[in-house]
Length: 127
Image (cartoon, rainbow, N blue to C red; front, top):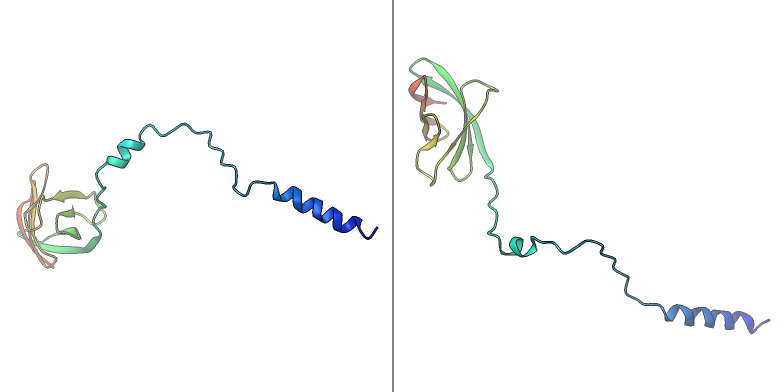
């Protein structure tokens, strides 16, 4: 009886040592057909972070415009009423006027801007 317990432990250890240490990897998915294209694709540019959201008082007409400025100075969102639909203004290079279809344009910084809005004309605005 004293010899049966150690013998059983040795048999169990031998049977476990015959097992593979590496897990079996099961992959039922076919190879990705776009893997080569994705590996050779150009890097994706993330959208810029918001720099600030400013409300401006504009002349003539004493009207308000709301502008969201973004890092890089190549993108801004323009609203003519608080909470209204934004017009996305873009520039190819920083320092160039931001423009959008329909005749929108914006130049300036977060303190003073000159903006052209269809139906309102050219406006000079300040904080």
